[in-house]
Length: 78
Image (cartoon, rainbow, N blue to C red; front, side, top):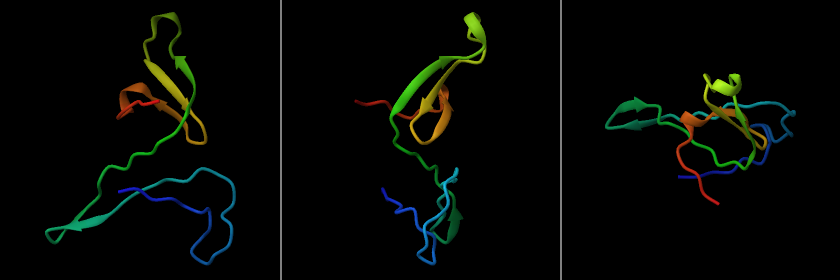
C-alpha cells in the first residue's frame, strides 16, 4: 500500500517545514496492529561512521529524510 501527502494539515493549511514521523495503525482480526512503515528516498551520500575502522557501520544520507543506518535499509533499486 502506498500513499502521498500533499503537505497540508487536516484543516487544509500548509504544514510548516520540518521533520515529520510516519506511522501506521490498523486492525487485524479485531486486534490493533502497528505495521512497519517504509519510505522511498534518493541516497545523497554515504558515510563510513566511526572512522577508518567503521565501528558504527555505514550511514546513508537520504534526500529529504535525514540519515539512516545501512542495516535498516529494506531494499535498494535504481
